[in-house]
Image (cartoon, rainbow, N blue to C red; front, top):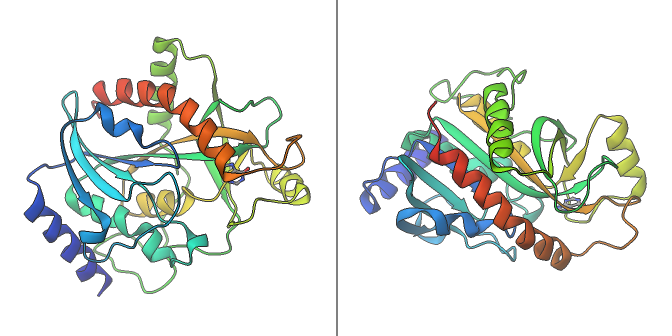
Length: 274
Ligand code: HPA
């Protein structure tokens, strides 16, 4: 049933575009400007695609954007779904299943996050090298469909080591100096964490915290995709930050980071040869 739902979306999309993406990109809050660098753009609003949900979060356009960067054919999600909006984990990750069945092999997942590691600063970009799922939920719970992947997928390389090295190399070539690397913890939201929760997450090994990315990462691994994760530090986490959090602040800083992130991702995708 779920397989059929995914294929219905895939078949619909194929009636709208002949593009055959090799790379998927998930654009987090305020980070959607990457699509401006794509050529041959074609847009499909989520509202038209069977099986897609509709997110109501500010800073999201809610559409799939097809196009090319250099020689690479890309499908970008301008807007994603979050667990805290009330969507099921299958709804949150539905587009990843669809992008896989459209042919992508690799995926770049971006987000805005709070910095837990005190050497980080707002404006930094963190290459994600592992995750902590503190959600108490998982998108793969339920019957398994072997056509997608195994019942018990391995997560020892949740973020591709090869892509991490590649991202580091390309950042160096561009002279980006605010690149960090670390562990991203998923917190359910929608409220920001308490200071005690941040201390707990730090003990669990987290360098940054956010409300997304991990469900998409789990499903991507399950589907055999190579994942590159980039978390943009828009604020320091609760208890470290001297000020209270607001979504407006997150969007404003994400907007400032967006230019550097776009430059970096564009350069990586232009040189994508995996
Ligand atoms: N916590 C959770 N999610 C976030 C944060 C944060 O501090 N900043 C941006 N997204």
